[in-house]
Length: 308
Image 1 (cartoon, rainbow, N blue to C red):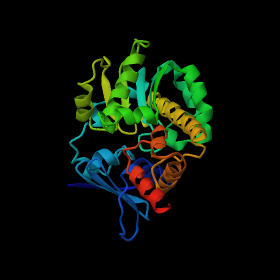
Image 2: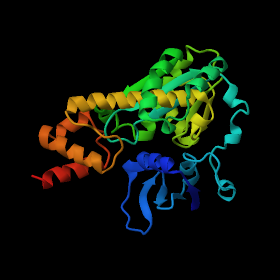
Image 3: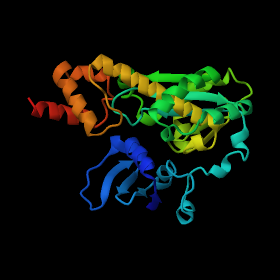
């Protein structure tokens, strides 16, 4: 069993907790502020802002938050190394893909593939394009329309109602593989100059390719995988901003339909709002707003019943 300990910034801790909220576990351990089990790995956040990743895929999960791991731990990896990426990756004309909404109980799952070539690099840097986690929602909402007008992109939005129809057949990883593949396949026909597609890695490459094999139409470009892909190419950073903006605007639209503000993430606030929806609109109404396979659904049902 591999163990990796990272020291993260408060903003990184916030992003990490949001990401793993759907897999949260209960703990009374001293100095622990959050714990979760995800991808055969236990993630533990301490009051010191240190995070311990322990389990089969500790390195994969740790690399979501730090591209460079402590040397002793990194040597134990059996995952795809960034050394397999082209040395000039950052300067290549590439399609980058990312997704937002996978860890949020309410709202859609959004996947976007974006093409960026060298002639667009300077403009994107001047606009401040970078990892969407490092930008405020206001900055993201201001940047996204400019990026959509400036860059060729393919966006796919799966609303909760459709998500719940697909989910029994497609688990969360398989669904994302299908969406990333579709977005890249649709976009690559418009950009013959693209040298490959860089995917912000959310699962081991072998797992991605296993699910990809079941897709009828597959992207033809060379595929590259790396965690925190937005740090490696502006195409992924641009895709992450477009995804996040669409998630936020769609969540706001769904909030209007639900007549209540739907929170992002999958914490206690989501349980409370879901319970209110159940009490006012009925359990069937949740399928239009939430991803029902999350543990929040059962918590909300129990909460709504207890308050009757």
